[in-house]
Image (cartoon, rainbow, N blue to C red; front, side, top):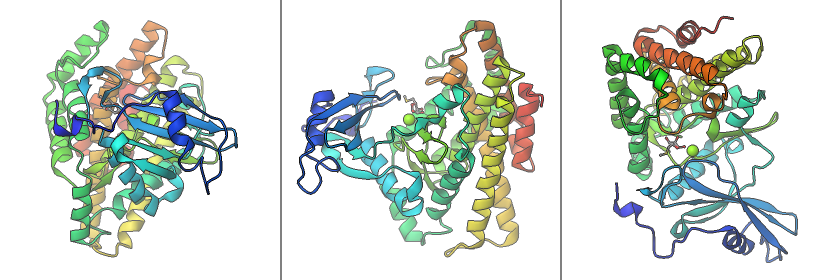
Length: 408
Ligand code: SR1
Ligand code: MG
């Protein structure tokens, strides 16, 4: 797994809280126009799988966040080295996003590639959406904002909006082999065979054994993996799940863009909707009488409708390459089918693979958790089996409702 990118620069050293505070005290936004920020404190809050994240506050009342890549996968430990260059790639992705959807990404104030860190806006006013959904909190702008982010950033970085050479040069700058390999393995390969990275509760093993022998599932995942590794269509976030979105009732920010790469356009939206579906399944299983599951399902539905409406409008207005009507219809149908397929793979992975979701894992009562995971696996499997034949994404919603037993 070692490559030259995983060997940190000699200047690189992971920061602790006091070093992070000292570092930020002399840089923007805490030190602005030479002003003294006073006493500066840092608190490490990173609860993701990969990085250090410090929230830094100053006596002068300013605050910011500092994100630094660790040279290994935090979730697993130093036995799994990982390029710290991902921090540079993440910041570069924000630079592109800022030109397209500035209101939906954090402001970046300072970057230091040799230390594999950047300082960005403090987003403490927002909550990580996954955590909110687990607690039954609704985010009223979520569907519209995530759909707008996915549609706008994807289409604006595609051959429909960028001149051919410009698009290829941008795609070359966004090459992200090590993080793409994580997704190839953990999302599109390992969950579909008896891999060591999977963690399968014993009662679910027969379900997984059946899924591994399902040739339609194997065909579908092979097609998705092929699309993932070969189709450099547009700049994607690459890891757009509910843990990569922060929101409150007025605002949404997309974070954790270190998996950004040029890939198949349906990936981001399919992944995000899959995470809403898992939330709906978890809530429906734990509290079938509570309308929250139905409301989340409606948000998933709305996310797709906003997304596809925006994509279609952008395509009709494309400055570089405007598809004729028939080709545009084919393109949108392929987008819906691929999104449903990627959603299926994401659901299986987040249920039994590495980095499983709190939506399901946090269900403390074991029989209830197993029922929720069984419903999720049924939904993921049905999506994979049926996605290539759906005639619209709405059919994928029905596949999930039917297979997971979401009876509303
Ligand atoms: C080894 S990294 C595991 C997961 O963490 C990230 O947030 C991505 O989702 C990745 O797949
Ligand atoms: Mg992440």
